[in-house]
Each structure stands twice: as structure tokens, then as C-alpha cells.
Image: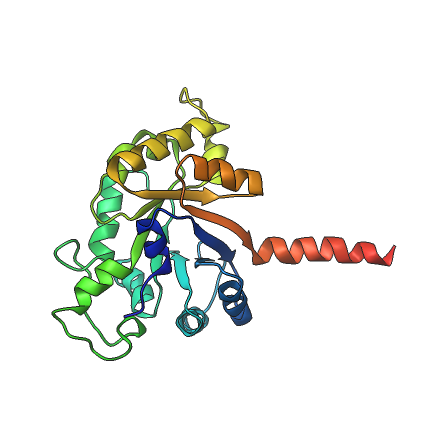
Length: 251
């Protein structure tokens, strides 16, 4: 089974270099791997792709040896672990506000004795070999990961309990959604406080955490707080910034 670069970096206490992809661009997978990224965050929450396109991108990730973390558009158990069977290294789930929801996701995405994922063994994750039933589930549990997003006021209030859930490998603060909610409700703490609370909870329970980062200074700030799952760069911003810059060349 292919080994996860993300989990290796987490275990080594290093930063996971992550970029975001929201469109079907097979070459992006090659370029991200070539330039030294560890993981591609494939956003299916806000972007739409056909299943065959997702499978294709996941196959390219194995070819070029880079993790893909799918931000899933569903909570359906079998659809979630199908992404792993098709070759995803990790699953990210948005709006996880309670430990009970985190436990439900562990149940879906981890094999026994941690969870209750269904066993097939004939997918890309098992190299299409129907791997040894005695060893493959353990390997899958060790080389795939679950990241839950902290994006609501309730999630921040429950962040310690969420970080403590066995089988949750990482927490990911979503400043866009969380910031939106904080503009309409004052819980007595700020967006920056949410990062501090998440960092403390993850340090306590030995769980990785991260967030999107916009600038080099932002990367360093979150690193200093202990953040490892740091997303910086993606297809949307690259295209938009290129067009903005290029059109100016006509002046």
C-alpha cells in the first residue's frame, strides 16, 4: 500500500505542504508533486466533478507519489470510504461541530478495531490485489487520515472533545465560515482565539491541526502555533492572479 507523505510529516513534527485543487486538471497533480508539495486538497464541497474525473486525479496522485485529501460533499458512509478505495490518502469533512459527528466519521473511514469501514481490498488503495485481509486493514488505518473542519462556534466550544476522538488525525480551522458566523454572533472570543484554542486542544491530545494560509508571514505564524496542515496556493488563485497580471501587459 502507498505510504502517506502527510502522515509521515505529521509524525516527524514537520509542516505538511498542501495546495488546493478545485477543477479537473490532471497536470496540476504532476506539477504539485514536482515542486515539492506533500498533499493536494481536492475540494468537492464547493466544486463539482464527475466520479470518473475524481478517480482519474486519484490515480495520477499514485503515479506521481503525492497525497490527495478529498474534501467530501457527502456524509454517506459508503461514499466516504469509496474515495479511499479509489486512492484518496485522506478525507476532509466540513462543519464537524461535535465529537459525536467526529465519531461517526471515524466509524465510516477506519477499519476495526477503530471504526466500522467496509472491507473490499480490490481498489487502488490495495493496488487492486485483494490484499491480505489480515494486514491490509491495519495498513489502511495507518496510511490514510481523517481531517475534520472547525468552522462553527459550536465546533470551537467543543474543540477539546473533538481533538480527543480516537481516529481523528487532524483538525482544520476554516476561517471563512467561522469568521462569517462570528460576524453575526459574539460568543466572547475572536477568530484568533479559535486558533489558540484549537492549537491547545491538539497539543493536549497529540492531534495535528492546520488552516489555509494566505502569505509567508501567515505560514510562519501558524507554524509557530504548532500548525502542520498548512494549505497555501491553488488553481483558483493562480488563474485569477495570472489573468489580472497578464491583461495589464496590454497597457
